[in-house]
Figure 1 (cartoon, helix red, strand yellow):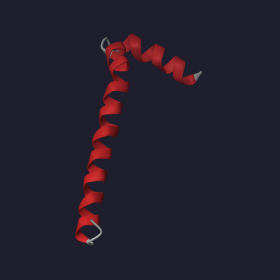
Figure 2 (tube, rainbow, N blue to C red; figure 1 turned 90 degrees about the vertical axis):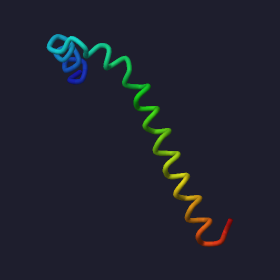
Figure 3 (cartoon, rainbow, N blue to C red; figure 1 turned 120 degrees about the vertical axis):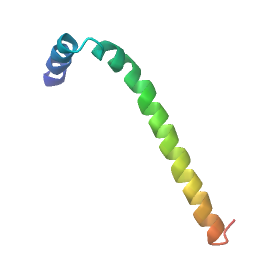
Figure 4 (cartoon, rainbow, N blue to C red; figure 1 turned 120 degrees about the horizontal axis):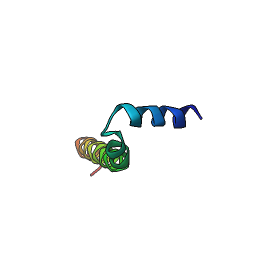
Length: 53
């Protein structure tokens, strides 16, 4: 309930809040993909350095 009230108040105060809220899932998914690529790359580097690959 508090989150719904907070969103209502934020949308009244900030004109671009609705656009930001609609785009947030796309930004979140892009960030998760980038972190996954980063972790995977460093994992492969470690495996290569230890001679596993």
